[in-house]
Image (cartoon, rainbow, N blue to C red; front, top):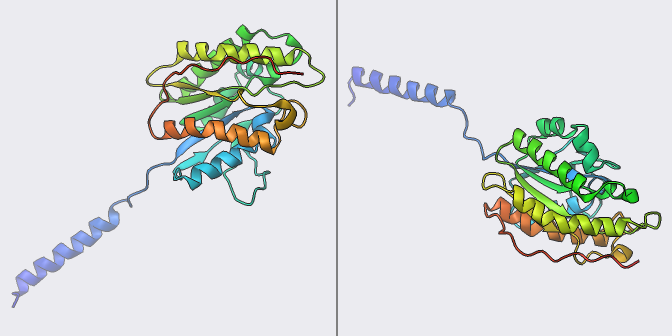
Length: 254
């Protein structure tokens, strides 16, 4: 039998253990990886490549993610729910966002770990903004991303082709920009904050994958999601895709 003094000591120890256990914080799951889709109306309205990409990530095991941004769009109806948060802004250009320093407050609010950037389409209209100016804007935006998060992973698209009836120079301007993006990225990428280029240009047909020569239809959104997915999955796995030769875009037939 336990002596009274031993029993008292045992009860005291149990009470102390319970008290300390209650005071300890609960173990929390790892924070989700925050992914910001950044762009113009091709990302924003409705930008359904985001829904398709989210769904594929979820169904292939990438569940610890959070799409982030100031717009909680949910306008794509494919029979499944998705995280609609994004930072797409219809009519915005890369040069405009950079010149007006619009990105830093978006980053401060969203705190992304990864940025998916499809930006530059609105810079092409009229043929007034040279490729070098768009790349300079990209460089400034990358600097702002890294200022917000030195470990930012940046996935940049060679943007989809465009061939609207009211812009005879647009197709060639996109081709010139897309040809320049891989070299620009190679010169700016770092081990800490890599820039991964995703070829959204090759295989995208403005006649069948858009409704107006610019904005994707469902077929176009599916192609975009299919191009984003492998690069994003490898970044999420901690494996940065190596620099590989990128097909040289040729002008889109009119």
